[in-house]
Image (cartoon, rainbow, N blue to C red):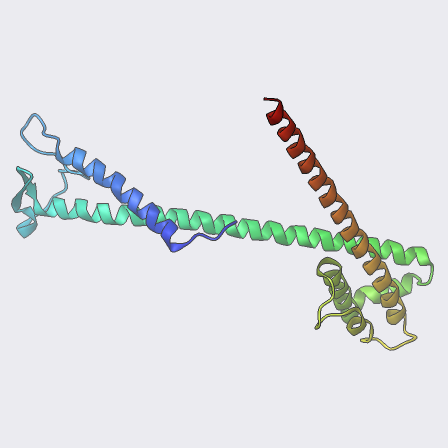
Length: 220
């Protein structure tokens, strides 16, 4: 979701203020049968002292206290509307982030499951080895980094070699990681190739549509 700017909420405030101002104009232009005039909130709110005094506005008497209450409503109501929209946007943003995190977790778990099946098919590791791999935090961290490279590719800070060298040669962890690096890179290249093929196919369809459109225009 695109992040909202201050101008977005300023626009909401302006529109809300315009709406409540319109209601105020309509309310203040009303005159009841008993000769009293309308207010935006209520003319029955008790006011006393200086707030009960009146002044003329647009040719009608206005009670100071009631006018100040209406003025406060006109200023505060748009702020409440802005706050509601802000909380809604914040909630949608968090929901979107949560959904993205869930998708990433599902993708990672799918990748790990495929890794487990592939390792099992090699018959190089037994049940005890797999249990050790699951309980080894450093090995699990290496799996996450292999997945990160699988998704984004190698960087200067994160390479396959930097992952493999965390374990000494001859250890089960090193053997497993060397195998998984080969497996992960193969899967990554396959995914890139598939994405490129889809892109070319989409470009070909778009080009075909443009050619068909041009031919139809020429016929006209």
